[in-house]
Image (tube, rainbow, N blue to C red; front, side):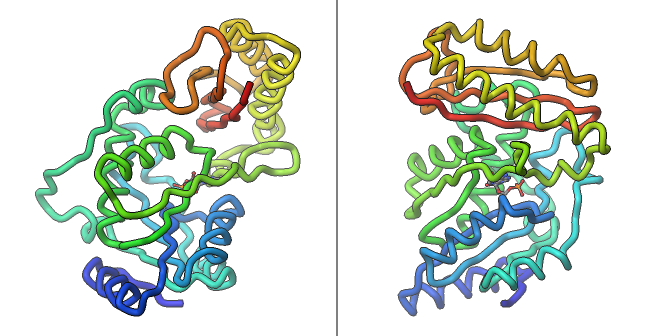
Length: 281
Ligand code: AMP
């Protein structure tokens, strides 16, 4: 496994791989790797000749007052995990390498960046879209791998690839969870033990919603009410949003029909956690 810190070297590596007719699977991350990330790496390892993992905590996607400074960073542990998973390259650029002085160009996506998390994290998806496009121009991959856990991000990236004609497949893989249902997240490390005990309520409330739909409930407002009611039963939990949206357009629905995403963001203590499920009628 090699560690590449320069954009030019990363591009040269990809040019060579393409010349050798090898495929590249790419897993963009912000590090603090957990089994959720590893599931993406394993899928890439299975499908592609070379696996590139990027580790870059992207300042452009953090708003003022968010956790950019305290975001967990542990490159040694991350590189050990990557090595064990058979990763070929870790792309680990500095902030200065990725954002040269006077950086001027940012990418905006219409509509998909309006609801859900975008309402509460202004500028977040502009930062995500910008860094992902930059990464795709640095790591010329055949396949890129993302998690369903960040479903709005996954939809936005699929739209970028389609609308800007990137010659690559976007693979979106299921959310990996702890045994009690809590979605794995680098931010789970912020939780105290009592907050950790409350946190599975996110997934429990989503599963309750799935049950309601299975039993015939189609009124989105009533389902959202039930989810909020269940979450508010936990002392450390404060709902930021619960939404039921169309799985393709991410537009809010009043009546459940077709393929829908039930998505939520909840503060557990000071830690903001997100989760979602997809339900097909
Ligand atoms: P991050 O390092 O948080 O930016 O995440 C990097 C990638 O891992 C993104 O595509 C995430 O959606 C994905 N990811 C994060 N958590 C999970 C999880 N629990 N299961 C599957 N994928 C995940």
